[in-house]
Image (cartoon, rainbow, N blue to C red; front, top):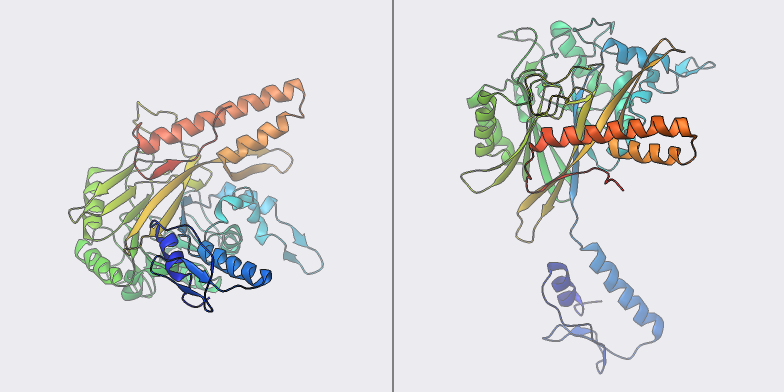
Length: 442
């Protein structure tokens, strides 16, 4: 198509005013006149169709595309969660191997569609991976089968800078790093040495380079002054973090900080953490995503002194766990609890000027935790609340009166969870560029 349609096509892609396509049968060559009209010599119908089809394909290909990144909350392998997985383990008797990653696939199978639409899905892995993989109620550990299941569900990256990273002592940290590498799961916040841990990860999504750095402000056991074989990024090493931000900003267009701190079950972040996160935003972080409270906390839009629009989500809650605690000291939203969470979708777009802008979608999710008397364990699964409401409504259409009554009660309960989560995230305020995804009542 030589130079003929390019001016017009570029104008269309840029959103500029463009004169309508005009075909003139006057010239022996295809070219563009000063008004960007396409001039064509008489040609047969197939050639004309091919030319128009090529132009349309070009127009569609240059339509602005968004890069998408997904964030989830705390992934906690409590003993009942691991027992649930084991009770659903499917064994190939001939080969004596698991067909579903030790049953861990079961935990994520109903939420998998919500994680499948992004090349980058990151969660907070709040447990070590260390032989013999045994654990206690508040001292976590898990078999690496769960990593294979997480990858199958869509996860591509985890942060391991959290209060449980030292639950299996120093050997557990080193083992966890080794297993994550073996299973091909990327990770931030901790690594084999200080330089690597603090360097973070940069991922190219579309034409946008996104940086990820991770830090914790709390551990259950003291971090040795001179750890051997690993390094944990500390949230309150301000000078180091400011240096980390400067370094990674040279390699990325948009910077995400994952942080782990605060008070468990608290509805709001601590003031000292708000001050710290805002300082890091002002230094160059574009998005900060928090963990540890196990309940959803507020989101906030912040305009930095240099004019950048930044966002912070202080806690996404639990993605999956065996916890059932309610939020503490919250007279406004007392029914918020650890079984409710959100999946955060980040959409990035690069403008013609090269600037990168962000928008968000928050999907409400819920962890079902139901006694399975036949297996003498609990069935624990994470579901998308809008998808679950839709599924129940379809079942209701073919149900009897008593079953419809039970379904109606469950649907009403799920609607109440949507309201609770929305209140926790927004505190009844609308935040520009953050959309809460929920099914509308008929």
